[in-house]
Image (cartoon, rainbow, N blue to C red):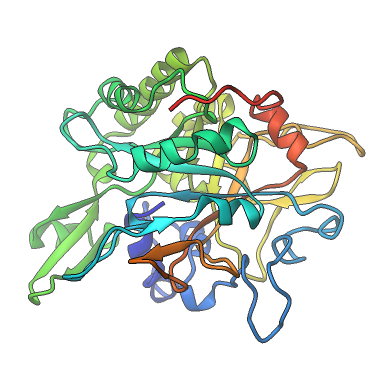
Length: 366
């Protein structure tokens, strides 16, 4: 998922030597790494000649990395197919190639904020294109909403906007609410008062402007209420339990103890980009999966040795995922430098289907 997180990646290493603020806590720094430091977890170095990686590196999958490859997914938005230039036409994603590469689920951005904000321009294209793939059990489709901090954008209004774009009766994965930094433009005075929550940017004309996290100006109780209203409204309309996309450190810093009861009720889709060495959560004894730490008081389901992984918690491990055969074309030319967010569910496809209620593929709806 794009936005303020992308702005942070290039600056993360610069922040390590400075004292973290209440918002940019130390854990957040460790959860975000410069592109140069990220391993290419989907397509290994061409020098290695290993082809497509069957799983994240061994330090993530200990000790069962060779026994299971898990279930891979991607998440996309208009950013993946935007292009520029006088002769540029819209880029396209070849879903059949993604299916050939073993991608089993795709979440796509549907909406941001309330009705005044236009839906993601790519959403209807992606959604329709994946209808048959979903029905055939090849690539399962799901959608997400970017929760915004703007005044007047309460959770109920944002949920209604999402449901007006995403048919709640369509065949789909559980809907997702995206709770992360909300980039808004601010003036210099605001930047000087909140330097740790803002980034300095330059326009193409060389003008300086400031992009800051809008959630800083929303009370903790209001942040929680917006999340609760969105989740409860969408759950009722879709008859599915939604998923929360976030980062562990950010969730803790922005919601604190108030978020504990909420995170217990839902599955977590965690953005965490690995680097060695770091601490991992010995999530489930069945296969010794080592997963990102969950927000406070959220828990991976308990289990016994030999049990299946009985959860919908999953993990976004890179925003630089690529494929051996490019899946995006622009003007008919393979865009081999384009990448996308990649995600991983730490168990078999059968377990994934059962956890997400996909044991019986639904009929096609467009």
